[in-house]
Amino acid sequence: MNGLSTLLERASARRHALSRDELVALLGLAAPGEIAALRAAAYAVKVRHSGRLVSLRGIIEMGNVCAKDCYYCGIRKGNDCVGRFELDEEAVLRAVRRNIDLRYGSLVLQSGEIASEKHTAFIERILRKIDELGGGAIGVTLSLGEQSEETYARWRAAGAHRYLLRIETSSPELYAKLHPADHSFERRVDCLRLLRKCGYQVGSGVMSGLPGQTLDDLAGDILFFRDLDLDMIGMGPYIPHHDTPLGRDIPFTPDYAADHLRLGLNMIAATRLFLHDVNIASTTALQALADDGREQGVLAGANVIMPNITDTEYRRSYQLYENKPCLDENAEQCRFCLERRLAAIGETINWGARGDSPHYAARLGE
Ligand code: 5AD
Ligand code: FES
Image (cartoon, rainbow, N blue to C red; front, top):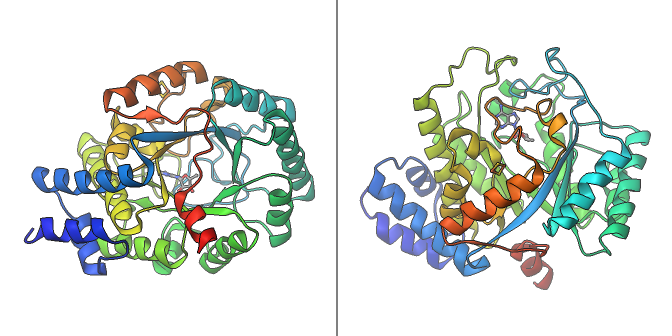
């Protein structure tokens, strides 16, 4: 690509300095030398904003009961092949204590989407207990789908700091192809605005490499992140799941893995170069495509990793996609594995720190 180094210099010097077409050009890079330059520029911006540190959030997969029927997802309501589970309060709190013992600093409560007073009150109770157990020092992120403003406000008041709600794709047309008619793109965008209004650090993200998705769609996703002024980004490659309508006929080959890994990493790098000071997660889906996928994500500009701390007996039932790694490794094994892997790339874990988004602090100070 002509002028790549000037373009990377401009993007590194100032955020929001790329046009849609320039984002498309970066996302499409495939030559090894060009990809290396892209990742190195993005990594330098990451180091400038968060050092050679990675912040961890233990993720607790609380249950796979879900009201949604997204065509790509392995725990969609219509998948009869998956056994459903819901952790009780004691099991969730066991994982919370594990997170504290491991000194992960922050944790994420994630489950399928459930909207009921019983569930809202259950989460509220858990949030209050986390506050007690961690002496108010633990960063708490929720990833519990679309909810009413009242529910978001109650959870925030009970101690949650951050909320993740992926838009999945910012193209309304593509969104409509990936979801049943009663799943509304507009409602999801509204939810992101409500979360912001309720005072959360707000995170969103997309899947890359979806059938029918173009590089222009992905460039649009990055502009969408800017327009919503997001604090955190969590993105990952789409990985076919064979018990879903979208993934049924997509063969998962080594070529698929290599192409989707490259695109996922280009997406992280371009997002870092465009937004600069947000938290970006290097997601488990990258690790499903390559053993060292998460480390590669960090070297492409991500600064957050979310290790699974769910009891191993439940992990098999929470496969949003196939080939999900670490199904049999317990939380302690994952901790040492991750520490060793990050040390190998010259990164240190930000032990015991909440690792809040620098962008959130900047926008509050504005
Ligand atoms: N491949 C990759 N990511 C997926 N997710 C759901 N299904 C898949 C899949 N097949 C992601 C969605 C969701 C997050 C919890 O998991 O982006 O928001
Ligand atoms: Fe789980 Fe490596 S992170 S075994």
